[in-house]
Amino acid sequence: MDFEAIKKVTLILLEYLPNTLSLFIWTLVFSIPIGMIVTWLKKCRCRPVNWLTDLYILIMRGTPLMLQIIAFHYAIPMIVSSAVSSGKTGGIIPFLQSIMNNEHYMIITLVVAFALNYAAYFAEIFRGGIEAIPKGQYEAAQMLGMTKMQTFFRIVLPQVTKRVIPATANEVIVLVKDTSLANVIAFAEITMKAKQQMNFYSSILPLFIAGIFYFVMNALVTMLFSFIEKKFDYYK
Amino acid sequence: MAILEVKHISKKFGDLEVLKDISFNVEVGEVVAIIGPSGSGKSTLLRCVNQLERADSGEINVCGMNMLHTEDGKAQYADKKTLRDIRLKIGLVFQNFNLFPHFSVMQNVIEAPVHVLKQSKAEATAKAQELLKKMGLEAKAKSYPCELSGGQQQRVSIARALALSPDVLFFDEPTSALDPELTGEILKVIKELAQEKMTMVIVTHEMAFARDVANHVIFMDQGYIVEEGTPEEVFGNTQNERTKQFLQRYNGGEPPLA
Figure 1 (cartoon, rainbow over the protein chains, first blue to last red):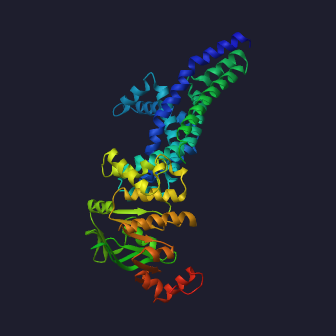
Figure 2: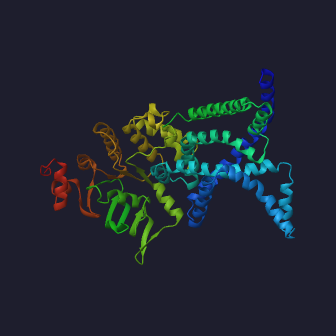
Figure 3: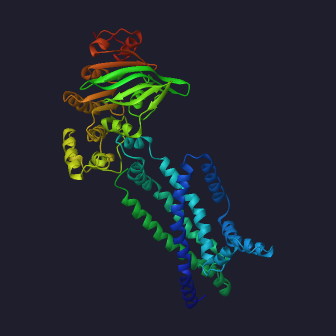
């Protein structure tokens, strides 16, 4: 590959960078709040809810994300086609069809699969953070007459945030790279395009360029997190 | 007037009876020291009075409000509002300080006055400054707990408890996490509070201090109050065999001071 070809490939990958980024960002936007909810469900005092939450986490962490992506992507079309072929067209079928025909169907199923998967990991990170807060902090707050809400938002949450930053950074870095799994359902992101260019030029260089893209993104993520970590450095 | 009345309190952890029929009173302005070997139930008793543990039966009245009474052998706690009112009358200083690490010294002290008592920040800050000055910490208002020595942290936690102007202050082994030098700082502060007629209940292993500061000494062993009285009675004229043994150990094997 000559320099012109490298430039051309780089520009093509750059064109599909927004797809990779939107999958990354939407996953974060949904998985972090869902993760918090899952943590809360896991810590609530209702046993059946705890079991269901455990099961959810077990499945999400216990099976490959790639399989989950495929399953979520093909589940709705399969439900619809089997319903239609057996003559059922009422109920939720029209609704499912409308989702299926949505122009963003692919990114929707990807974000659902990614967010549910990452929420399981985030939930465990947050739980670890909450459980690391000494009992004495709750007791001190209680003795000062603080309500449960005040205790959580003013005492516990700020300390949990500091504690979960390193583990969260880890997870976000993995997510940057995991967006490449979206190519299994032919989502046009960087890895998918790099593979096409690899075949076109019969060269491994496009994959190398894609690697540089991920590397730069993760360098930025790493810098951002060390900045946040420093912000919390004023206490131990 | 009794500021705290504890009557026939019992408490079990599983099959283990940690408190057995405990009764005592604390009068206004009195300093009560609770001493005894580890595992005798001193801390559990304090935690029951402070609502950090629930007693199984008995009666507790704080400042004329009923916190707990027993009906048909089962403990009945007062409604939430009363429990909260009682809690605000009581301050507790922990063995491990339990300061909020993400707050500065000043924020630690004004947190409850501002967010619980809804005082203005200016009012709370003025009072906090006064308290910190009393604790010899006026220069440390902007520091974070991790930057302070153990003794300083414990003084902050005393200021934090006093910021709510409690009617009675409890100490749960306030010097057990400190070396002898820092212990001295804390004992000095408590002595000063005693001179100001602050009502205090102190669980401690500092026998000399208990003898010196307390008006009333309670010796506990295996969940019972086995001996109580003035320091002169308990230390000087020990009646109970178990108390004698314990105090001897503290005096390095010598007989208790006469």
